[in-house]
Image (cartoon, rainbow, N blue to C red; front, side, top):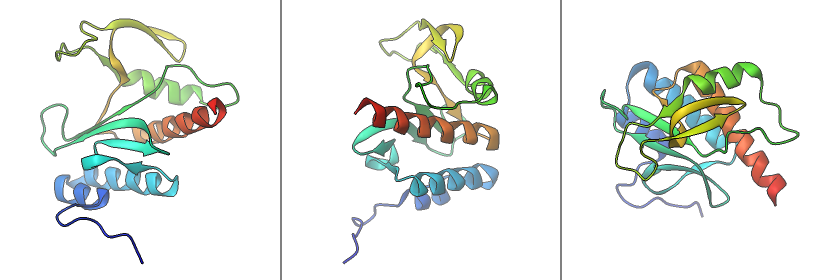
Length: 158
């Protein structure tokens, strides 16, 4: 018997279709297909990306033009590439374009800290080092690679 979803609970894809429009929706659906193909899922209310019970990223999706909308993904990473994993220089450049500078949101990390992200130093970085807001195709490719990197790191850590 197939697993049934609770009444009124949307799948991630349904939430994307309901919430986002145009190229934003198309990009989000592409990312959802990647998650499914890589045995990644979304957690409660589709607010996290999960692998084997561990959170790999946080998601906000409301379709609104004000930040953090229409959708933003904050990957969980430590800013270094694990030994044995290939993360091209072009992907580092995309990651650097998405450094999450502290916006004094009230979090414990305010006013941000100096952090090294893939070998480059940044000031006033939020606790969530990267934020991909309304990611385009290039940013989505970087996000996919970051999800693969986290899975790889989890596998070598045990």
